[in-house]
Length: 296
Image 1 (cartoon, helix red, strand yellow):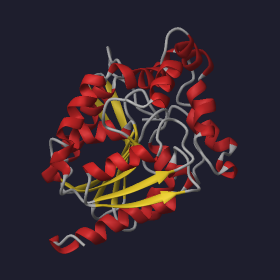
Image 2: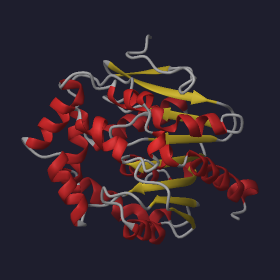
Image 3: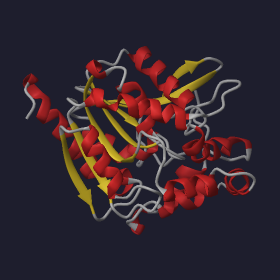
Image 4: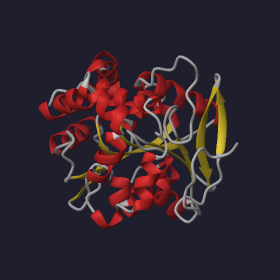
């Protein structure tokens, strides 16, 4: 299949893979060989978010990075509503299709609830987890609630996303702390997947679902204690103003007691853009901690 938009081949030098999903398809990367790592993105990002992590690690690991239906180069099937529940089901179909076993899962933003929805039901299939600026419980803090109302509300939030492509054009650049990394090429890579008002609906649904998916999020949280023995690396960008203060990081530390935590003073919400080197180091660290079947 042809890519729906052009990319700088130096930035994204990867082979495309396409998984038929109902009457749509999921685009994903499958790079390298070795222990498997599943890389899950949030809003309004896609596998491009992990490009530098993949380039760093593909000589050591097999790296799987999907685009959720409606994001990146994936095409949503008919009747798709772009809810996190549906995105989680899509990811689980891909996991089964690729027969992924004993893998490390890496999550950030909506990748947290989507990935943890799988993790709490398949603990024995996970080697470890890397967590960055995310959550997996009902939003209780005011910044997250206000963000949801503003970005996922009606009619202003919907207008901002569908008519102005606000999330991709404005939120993403402001969610990267190191301004020199916000290039024209990067801006284009995050706005090109959403060329029309209809194509931008997923970027409105996700912030809306911070409030609307409370029951689903509460169910995930109720099962997080099952991950008490899961090796974890926590990376936290402190310059994130989108509802992810250090208190959220502390909550992860309680649910994932076998954690090693690194606080990043030079990173914001999109840690993969600010510090891809530390994301790669965290994945290597999980591997080193779990080699030989003895947790280190």
